[in-house]
Amino acid sequence: MVTIDEVVVPPPSEGEALDPMSWYDSPGPFELEIGCGKGGFLLDRARSHPHVRLLGVEWANKYYRFCADRMARWNIRNVRVMRTDASELVIRHLPQRCVSVLHLYHPDPWPKKRHHKRRLIRPEFVDAVIRVLVAGGRWRIQSDHEEYFLLIRSLLDRQEALQPVPWDEELGAASAGWSGTNFEVKYAREGRTILRAAYAVR
Image (tube, rainbow, N blue to C red; front, side):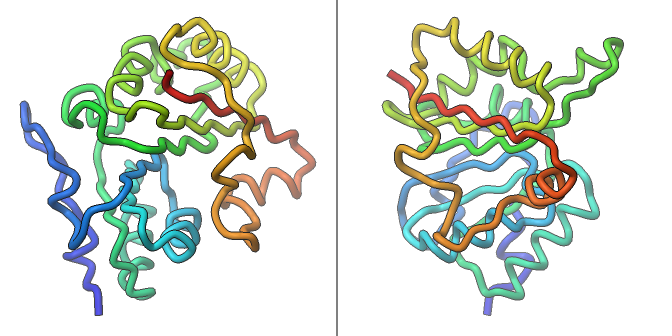
């Protein structure tokens, strides 16, 4: 059985260059989910794609702990969970060309103007994502917040290294029976429009 200690990966120390493949028992495509919450997406994708190696990053301690415990209870061997600042992780600690797919579903929009500086999607973060994605790697984004989503699209559409691709071209969300992330299910029930975009590194 998998233990929580096997699932959890400690956050990097200052200046540390990570080797994600060292966390897993065998090699495979490496995917990153930022804001994994309680781990619903990670669990479904890990079970339906056992050849994929997944890292879920979550800042909220209670969700991070719930997610790690969930992976252990389900005996999931191809998922690791880390509590850290996702922006710092991508910008400063991940090696080049290591991520096959970046999953970013319902990032916090920080809707008040004075809080916009806290938003994840900023030019330096976008540059870092392009650096860590493999050639042809995908960046999948989903949001219920139109203003933030349109801002993200505008920023990514200006990147020569990225090209838009159809959302359902290759991955789907996870397995055929996948009903959506916690936020996706909640917002769909509330009647909110779910906005999606996918990009590939040229």
